View 1 (tube, rainbow, N blue to C red):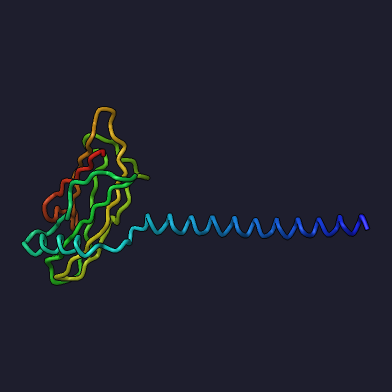
View 2: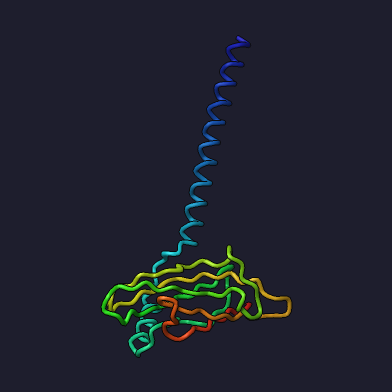
Length: 167
């Protein structure tokens, strides 16, 4: 009778251990999925931001950032950049962010996420997300830098100033 109880206890322990491992794995999967969705560069642009970018681009500008000054509420500041292709054919545009050119903070490679190349059909526009996590200088409450767009190594549109303000 003692051996049977010991075997039954071992079987129950193994079943509970397997269920625990499965639940832990599911927890990690759900956490990772939620985290990745939050950091996804293909986030949908809000209709208000899209309207602001379209209005700026329709006024004749080739490059626009809807809101170029933001209070950093979390780790990352998000900026939407709009680019209008004025050519009749599809062109590839390069978004250039000079990390060393920021004033009041340091930007590291792992703290900067954006599409470096954007292909846009002729006479159309695209809006792309730029995520920046500034590391503020000791005595600074704001961080500013320039975003440029180039086509075939030539500047395209006006350079855009972006500013992040520490809350």
